[in-house]
Image (cartoon, rainbow, N blue to C red; front, side):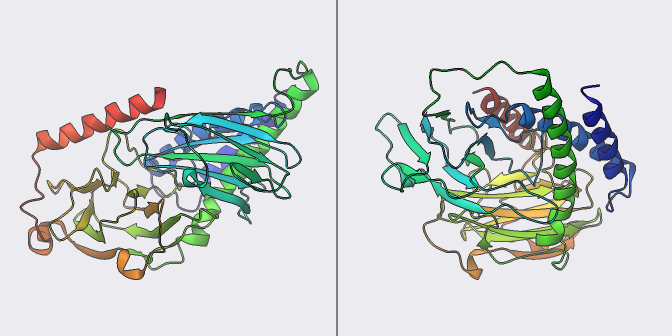
Amino acid sequence: MLTESFAAAIAEAEKIIAEAPHVQTEQDLTEGYDYLAGSIRASLQMAWAYDRDFPFFVQSTGPYTKMGLDNPDTLYFHAYIREDAEYVVTGRRGSTADLSFQVLNGDYSPVDVPDSLTAFDDRAFDIAADGSFEIRFGPGESGPNYFHLGTGSAMLIVREVYSDWTAEQRGMIRIRRADTTGSAPPMPAKELMAKRYGVAGKMLIGRLRTFLAFPKWFYLKLPVNTMTEPRSTPGGLTTQFSSAGHYDLADEQAMIITVPASEAPYQGFQLGSMWYVSLDYINHQTSLTADQARIDPDGRIRYVVSERDPGLANWIERTGHSRGYLQIRWQRLSRELKPEDGPQVEVVDVGDLPRRLPFHAEARVTPSQYAERIAARQAAVATRMVG
């Protein structure tokens, strides 16, 4: 059977989910099976999109294909490439906070992170007055609007990042290989279909094992209920810094995370589950950008992570997750961040928030005001996913 290898991979993947070390509750397992469904879908899509001679951008992750602590504020796209060919990328710059490009030399694995061979944002090339642009990637020397593909170049990743979900508009982007434009690939043979099912199965297993191991490298060795100083994000995104941590909170506890509002075009905070994916950011406020958050008169953002509703604008909903990951990202930076740019963390009882939280009275919101915030999130995600 053509699909036999993929069916075997699904059975192995289900076992990986069921035996994951963090699974303690029925909710953990249910979310794991949901994560598995998205991973199956994504692996099939990636295997069928593997064409380095006639490439196209596909969405790498989204609300139903989550992986790698996906950023709720980002649209991710990727295309497969080869180091000895030239590719033309054209598009129109939208009004989003950041648009960045990265070339990787391999895939993530349970023991390694792929090297970043090239990473830059749209400040590195010319954009016309109408937002249009054309850049090239290839084996030639780097120059204006031309970026060299180093040895082993395998994938081009594009990130389009929103800060104001309601006001910013997504752009457009496409890719073609320069010497195959106007021609067509051969019709796929049965042997290619069998190969793609096999590749999809390997991608599925590798994806699950990798992102169960990934937090051990960067999160779980840190003291619980703390966050790191800002640091250059692992993986080579040169204009991005991040602060990471993991939490373990009782239902009567709240975590206050205080961080200066940055001058960077993008600053965002989110929670992630123990499956190392974002929580439901469409129907719950499990993330906030600086544009979405309330900034206190002293120039600081104070997030309140808790299970119980504290009646505050910057409530970050745990949605039943007593344990999970914390992440702050700054993007499109023009300087390196210092420790004082990073967060301070304090765990308090929810009932003590009025006493422990500066500007508590001013930060209050009514249930109807909070419902309006959720409605705006739902509408914004729906718009950008089909925009």
